[in-house]
Picture 1 (cartoon, rainbow, N blue to C red):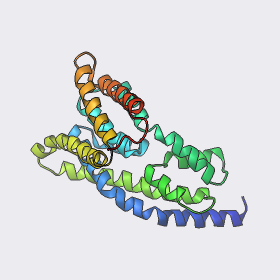
Picture 2 (cartoon, rainbow, N blue to C red; picture 1 turned 180 degrees about the horizontal axis):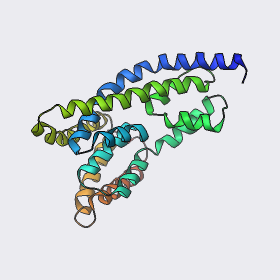
Picture 3 (cartoon, rainbow, N blue to C red; picture 1 turned 180 degrees about the vertical axis):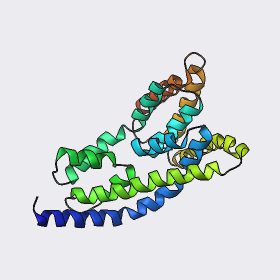
Length: 234
Protein backbone atom coordinates (compact mmCIF):
# COMPACT_ATOMS: atom_id res chain seq x y z
CA UNK A 1 0.00 0.00 0.00
CA UNK A 2 1.50 3.33 -1.05
CA UNK A 3 2.06 6.22 1.35
CA UNK A 4 -0.60 8.25 -0.48
CA UNK A 5 -3.23 5.56 0.10
CA UNK A 6 -2.20 5.27 3.76
CA UNK A 7 -2.52 9.01 4.19
CA UNK A 8 -5.98 8.97 2.60
CA UNK A 9 -7.09 6.12 4.89
CA UNK A 10 -5.81 8.00 7.96
CA UNK A 11 -7.70 11.10 6.85
CA UNK A 12 -10.89 9.09 6.31
CA UNK A 13 -10.42 7.37 9.67
CA UNK A 14 -10.12 10.75 11.41
CA UNK A 15 -13.21 11.97 9.59
CA UNK A 16 -15.02 8.84 10.72
CA UNK A 17 -14.00 9.45 14.34
CA UNK A 18 -15.43 12.95 14.10
CA UNK A 19 -18.66 11.71 12.50
CA UNK A 20 -18.98 9.05 15.20
CA UNK A 21 -18.80 11.57 18.06
CA UNK A 22 -22.54 12.16 18.01
CA UNK A 23 -23.16 8.40 18.21
CA UNK A 24 -20.75 8.12 21.14
CA UNK A 25 -22.65 10.82 23.01
CA UNK A 26 -25.98 9.17 22.20
CA UNK A 27 -24.75 5.79 23.45
CA UNK A 28 -23.68 7.20 26.82
CA UNK A 29 -27.04 6.98 28.68
CA UNK A 30 -28.05 3.69 27.03
CA UNK A 31 -24.73 2.00 27.86
CA UNK A 32 -24.72 3.31 31.43
CA UNK A 33 -28.27 2.00 31.86
CA UNK A 34 -27.20 -1.37 30.49
CA UNK A 35 -24.34 -1.52 32.98
CA UNK A 36 -26.71 -0.67 35.84
CA UNK A 37 -29.23 -3.31 34.76
CA UNK A 38 -26.52 -5.92 34.20
CA UNK A 39 -25.40 -5.38 37.78
CA UNK A 40 -28.99 -5.65 39.01
CA UNK A 41 -29.53 -8.84 36.99
CA UNK A 42 -26.61 -10.51 38.75
CA UNK A 43 -23.91 -10.43 36.07
CA UNK A 44 -20.33 -9.89 37.18
CA UNK A 45 -18.31 -6.92 35.98
CA UNK A 46 -16.32 -9.19 33.64
CA UNK A 47 -19.50 -10.76 32.20
CA UNK A 48 -21.12 -7.36 31.63
CA UNK A 49 -18.04 -5.96 29.91
CA UNK A 50 -17.58 -9.13 27.85
CA UNK A 51 -21.17 -8.92 26.61
CA UNK A 52 -20.67 -5.35 25.43
CA UNK A 53 -17.26 -6.15 23.94
CA UNK A 54 -18.26 -9.28 22.02
CA UNK A 55 -21.98 -8.79 21.35
CA UNK A 56 -22.06 -5.00 20.87
CA UNK A 57 -25.78 -4.82 20.13
CA UNK A 58 -27.93 -2.72 22.41
CA UNK A 59 -31.35 -4.25 21.76
CA UNK A 60 -29.97 -7.81 21.81
CA UNK A 61 -28.10 -7.17 25.06
CA UNK A 62 -31.20 -5.78 26.77
CA UNK A 63 -33.17 -8.78 25.50
CA UNK A 64 -30.47 -11.14 26.78
CA UNK A 65 -30.62 -9.52 30.23
CA UNK A 66 -34.37 -10.06 30.31
CA UNK A 67 -33.96 -13.73 29.39
CA UNK A 68 -31.16 -14.19 31.92
CA UNK A 69 -33.33 -12.62 34.62
CA UNK A 70 -36.07 -15.23 34.08
CA UNK A 71 -33.59 -18.12 33.97
CA UNK A 72 -33.65 -18.87 30.24
CA UNK A 73 -31.12 -21.35 28.84
CA UNK A 74 -28.11 -20.35 26.75
CA UNK A 75 -29.39 -21.79 23.46
CA UNK A 76 -32.71 -19.91 23.70
CA UNK A 77 -30.84 -16.66 24.44
CA UNK A 78 -28.53 -17.15 21.45
CA UNK A 79 -31.44 -17.98 19.13
CA UNK A 80 -33.51 -15.02 20.31
CA UNK A 81 -30.67 -12.52 19.91
CA UNK A 82 -30.04 -13.95 16.44
CA UNK A 83 -33.65 -13.20 15.49
CA UNK A 84 -33.40 -9.69 16.97
CA UNK A 85 -30.21 -8.97 15.00
CA UNK A 86 -31.15 -10.62 11.72
CA UNK A 87 -31.77 -7.16 10.22
CA UNK A 88 -28.00 -6.71 10.14
CA UNK A 89 -27.84 -9.08 7.18
CA UNK A 90 -29.73 -6.53 5.08
CA UNK A 91 -27.77 -3.62 6.53
CA UNK A 92 -24.46 -5.32 5.71
CA UNK A 93 -25.57 -6.01 2.15
CA UNK A 94 -26.54 -2.37 1.73
CA UNK A 95 -23.26 -1.07 3.17
CA UNK A 96 -21.30 -3.46 0.96
CA UNK A 97 -22.68 -1.59 -2.05
CA UNK A 98 -21.85 1.78 -0.48
CA UNK A 99 -18.28 1.15 0.72
CA UNK A 100 -15.35 0.88 -1.67
CA UNK A 101 -14.01 -2.59 -2.25
CA UNK A 102 -11.68 -3.78 0.51
CA UNK A 103 -9.91 -6.88 1.82
CA UNK A 104 -12.32 -9.44 3.41
CA UNK A 105 -10.55 -9.01 6.77
CA UNK A 106 -11.18 -5.26 6.64
CA UNK A 107 -14.85 -5.91 5.84
CA UNK A 108 -15.06 -8.31 8.78
CA UNK A 109 -13.69 -5.62 11.10
CA UNK A 110 -16.15 -2.90 10.17
CA UNK A 111 -19.10 -5.29 9.81
CA UNK A 112 -18.71 -6.14 13.51
CA UNK A 113 -19.19 -2.46 14.34
CA UNK A 114 -22.20 -2.01 12.05
CA UNK A 115 -24.90 -0.92 14.49
CA UNK A 116 -28.10 0.87 13.43
CA UNK A 117 -26.50 4.25 14.11
CA UNK A 118 -23.22 3.46 12.34
CA UNK A 119 -25.26 2.23 9.37
CA UNK A 120 -27.29 5.47 9.35
CA UNK A 121 -24.19 7.68 9.35
CA UNK A 122 -22.47 5.59 6.66
CA UNK A 123 -25.45 5.22 4.34
CA UNK A 124 -26.16 8.97 4.30
CA UNK A 125 -22.68 9.87 3.02
CA UNK A 126 -22.45 11.08 -0.56
CA UNK A 127 -20.77 8.81 -3.09
CA UNK A 128 -18.58 5.85 -2.22
CA UNK A 129 -17.37 5.52 1.38
CA UNK A 130 -13.85 4.40 2.23
CA UNK A 131 -13.17 1.65 4.77
CA UNK A 132 -11.23 4.06 6.99
CA UNK A 133 -14.31 6.23 7.45
CA UNK A 134 -16.69 3.47 8.55
CA UNK A 135 -14.03 1.98 10.83
CA UNK A 136 -13.57 5.38 12.45
CA UNK A 137 -17.30 5.75 13.05
CA UNK A 138 -17.51 2.21 14.44
CA UNK A 139 -14.52 2.72 16.76
CA UNK A 140 -16.14 5.77 18.38
CA UNK A 141 -19.44 3.94 18.83
CA UNK A 142 -17.75 0.81 20.18
CA UNK A 143 -15.52 2.67 22.63
CA UNK A 144 -18.45 4.63 24.01
CA UNK A 145 -20.65 1.55 24.43
CA UNK A 146 -18.00 -0.58 26.14
CA UNK A 147 -16.54 2.11 28.40
CA UNK A 148 -19.93 3.41 29.53
CA UNK A 149 -21.12 -0.13 30.25
CA UNK A 150 -18.29 -0.29 32.78
CA UNK A 151 -19.21 3.12 34.17
CA UNK A 152 -22.82 2.03 34.61
CA UNK A 153 -21.83 -1.21 36.33
CA UNK A 154 -19.52 0.59 38.76
CA UNK A 155 -22.25 3.15 39.48
CA UNK A 156 -24.57 0.24 40.25
CA UNK A 157 -22.01 -1.24 42.63
CA UNK A 158 -22.05 2.01 44.58
CA UNK A 159 -25.82 1.85 45.08
CA UNK A 160 -27.39 0.33 48.21
CA UNK A 161 -28.00 -3.42 47.99
CA UNK A 162 -31.78 -3.03 48.15
CA UNK A 163 -31.70 -0.64 45.19
CA UNK A 164 -29.37 -2.95 43.24
CA UNK A 165 -31.84 -5.83 43.66
CA UNK A 166 -34.70 -3.69 42.39
CA UNK A 167 -32.84 -2.69 39.22
CA UNK A 168 -34.16 -5.79 37.41
CA UNK A 169 -37.61 -4.19 37.52
CA UNK A 170 -36.22 -1.25 35.56
CA UNK A 171 -35.48 -3.66 32.70
CA UNK A 172 -39.21 -4.15 32.08
CA UNK A 173 -39.77 -0.40 32.32
CA UNK A 174 -37.08 0.04 29.67
CA UNK A 175 -38.86 -2.32 27.27
CA UNK A 176 -42.17 -0.53 27.84
CA UNK A 177 -40.52 2.83 27.16
CA UNK A 178 -39.05 1.48 23.91
CA UNK A 179 -42.40 0.01 22.84
CA UNK A 180 -44.71 2.97 23.51
CA UNK A 181 -43.45 5.26 20.65
CA UNK A 182 -43.99 2.43 18.14
CA UNK A 183 -47.46 1.75 19.51
CA UNK A 184 -48.43 5.36 18.84
CA UNK A 185 -47.41 5.15 15.18
CA UNK A 186 -48.95 1.88 13.99
CA UNK A 187 -51.87 -0.28 15.04
CA UNK A 188 -49.99 -3.24 13.64
CA UNK A 189 -47.46 -2.87 16.47
CA UNK A 190 -50.28 -2.74 19.02
CA UNK A 191 -51.77 -6.00 17.74
CA UNK A 192 -48.31 -7.58 17.54
CA UNK A 193 -47.54 -6.69 21.15
CA UNK A 194 -50.92 -7.90 22.42
CA UNK A 195 -50.89 -11.17 20.45
CA UNK A 196 -47.26 -11.96 21.34
CA UNK A 197 -47.90 -11.30 25.04
CA UNK A 198 -51.05 -13.45 25.00
CA UNK A 199 -49.34 -16.30 23.18
CA UNK A 200 -46.34 -16.14 25.50
CA UNK A 201 -48.61 -16.34 28.56
CA UNK A 202 -50.33 -19.41 27.10
CA UNK A 203 -47.23 -21.19 25.80
CA UNK A 204 -45.28 -20.62 29.03
CA UNK A 205 -47.74 -22.99 30.74
CA UNK A 206 -46.42 -25.87 28.63
CA UNK A 207 -42.84 -25.06 27.58
CA UNK A 208 -39.84 -23.25 29.12
CA UNK A 209 -40.17 -19.45 29.25
CA UNK A 210 -37.29 -18.86 26.80
CA UNK A 211 -38.88 -20.99 24.08
CA UNK A 212 -42.33 -19.55 24.76
CA UNK A 213 -40.97 -16.05 24.07
CA UNK A 214 -39.30 -17.20 20.84
CA UNK A 215 -42.35 -19.08 19.53
CA UNK A 216 -44.79 -16.35 20.57
CA UNK A 217 -42.71 -13.72 18.77
CA UNK A 218 -42.35 -15.76 15.58
CA UNK A 219 -46.00 -16.86 15.45
CA UNK A 220 -47.38 -13.40 16.26
CA UNK A 221 -45.15 -11.54 13.78
CA UNK A 222 -45.88 -14.04 11.00
CA UNK A 223 -49.63 -13.94 11.66
CA UNK A 224 -49.79 -10.14 11.84
CA UNK A 225 -47.84 -9.76 8.57
CA UNK A 226 -50.13 -12.29 6.88
CA UNK A 227 -53.33 -10.67 8.15
CA UNK A 228 -52.16 -7.04 7.74
CA UNK A 229 -49.50 -7.20 5.00
CA UNK A 230 -49.76 -3.58 3.97
CA UNK A 231 -49.67 -0.51 6.17
CA UNK A 232 -51.59 -1.85 9.10
CA UNK A 233 -52.57 1.59 10.30
CA UNK A 234 -55.89 3.26 11.24
